[in-house]
Length: 137
Image (cartoon, rainbow, N blue to C red; front, side, top):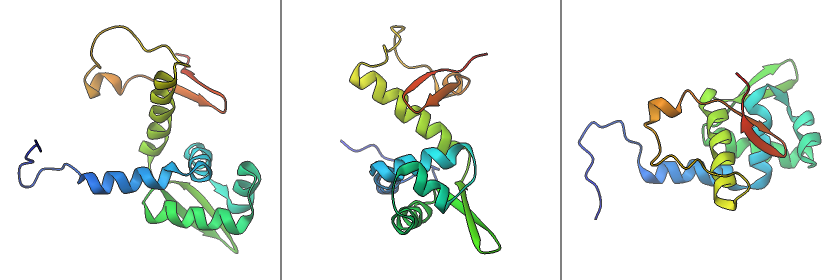
């Protein structure tokens, strides 16, 4: 059974969501997106971070840009990339948290069903290269 969405609803089509997730699904693109979600970076710096050639990183950035996940600014001959908005960092943290739950690396809370979105929005997480943990208050 498919849920009917009222006309004019702000709900995004499933196909669009899947396209965004596909853009993130590549390990190199995930690492690039994670790197630019906290600060603006140049292509050369990103190539060093992910251990890939500049040309390869540029192609990945083009896909992330086409998906609306990164934006860029030019400074002379250099181009700097950053997350398109603050929701990108949230998506990266949520993906890490969910993966931790699914793989058993992070023990899920045993407090019943998930809280409403508004309540969950106040939870801060710190995504580090090797782990995800609640942010210090």
